[in-house]
Image (cartoon, rainbow, N blue to C red):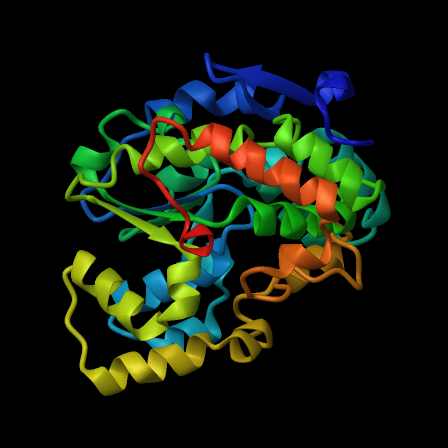
Length: 320
């Protein structure tokens, strides 16, 4: 199945901006929009493949007084909640996995938990809650920014597309079997889940001056991680010494992060939700899109970007 609107029963378009989501979103949309917030909640909002996991780890550590011990013992998935997980763990996939693991009650229990609505999972989570989501701001509680802190991360859409392409080939929720050129044509026509990309990012950009919003570019993290960590710490009301920031920077270096078992999704591979050779954390760099785009695609991408950045002062660091 290629995950496009034509996939019929699997997809829906939502709202005036026609965000493309899994049909299961209908079951929890109202609950998510109206979910009770807590003053110490921290939301991480991103379009997929924008550095979500990397940023979540650094936000959690900065907010948790650099508690590396707990971070090492407790997987990131247990220290946070992914509000959209039940959308990815859709019924068809779950039924297939249940048959595969029919003789393992622990697996079956875990698979069932994945189907628990995100709003319900959030309500049962102890404070402070770290909540990540790919849903746009307009689908989250309207009092979000007045009630909680929100970190939004945006990334060059060309790199997003490459990373999303690889995930879509490896992740059983998507099962995309085409080449990158085909995937790119879907991406710029807003036919991948959580699209349209630019509407998603611009919603957050418009709110970047709100005191409870920290808007980051993925490229900023790559260019000067220590300085960006200080920004995040200040936003969270935390103060750290330079040596502590340096230690965290080392913890977050790509090779260290990629090999950190507490931030991986090895259980997804174990359950059969992701290909055994798939990589959830891939390259961790900027500009890798150039290895995938031919001249026509490069021109097409620039035109698409220019058209979508009209009437806005938003510019990605990689495009300046």
